[in-house]
Amino acid sequence: MKIITVCLGNICRSPMAEGILRHLARERGITIRTDSAGTSDYHVGEAPDRRAQAAMKRKGIDIGDLRARQFVAKDLEDFDIILAMDASNLQNMLKLAPNDALAAKAYLIMDHAPAHPLREVPDPYFGGDEGFDAVYHMLMDACNALLDEVEQRTNLKHGAQ
Ligand code: 4NP
Picture 1: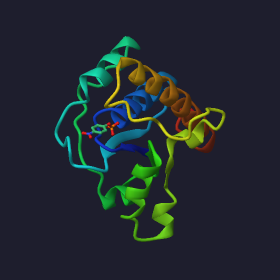
Picture 2 (picture 1 turned 180 degrees about the vertical axis):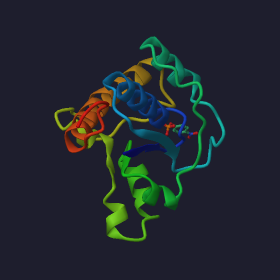
Picture 3 (picture 1 turned 30 degrees about the horizontal axis):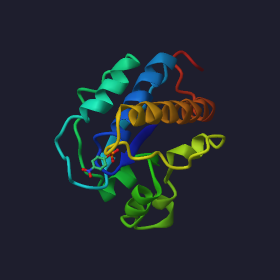
C-alpha cells in the first residue's frame, strides 16, 4: 500500500501528514510506503517548515529528514491513495489525471474524518504555532481512521495469515 499526502508547498501540512502516517504505521506494525509532495515548486528541496517540525516534535515525531518535492502526473500511477489537504490541491492534481481511474485515487484527506467540522486542512503557513497544532490534531484523526480502513482492507499486519 503506497500513500502520498499532498499540499501546496510540501513544507507544512503534507510532510506533517506523512510523518503522522509513518509514525502510526510503525506503532500499529503495518507496512505501508509513504511520501508527500506539493502541487507548487515553491519550496522544492527544503526541509519541513521549522514550525511544522516543532509541532511534530512536541508530539514526539521527527520529520526533519523529509524534503519537499513537486507532485507529478506519474504519482497518480505510482500511489494507491493520494490525499489532498484542500480542494485547491485536489483540483490541481486532477488537472494532471489522464483518466477517471487515476483521478479516483485522489480525494480530500478529511474525507476520512467526516465528523470533523472542517473538510479542508487550513494552510498554517501565514499563521502562528497554534495553527500547526490544530493541523496536527486534524491529521491525526484522519490518519488513524485511514489506517483503520487500510488494516481492514488489507492483510498487512505483521504475522497475519
Ligand atoms: P503547505 O503550506 O502547502 O502546507 O506546505 C504552504 C507553504 C508555503 C506556501 C504556502 C503554503 N507559500 O506560499 O510559500
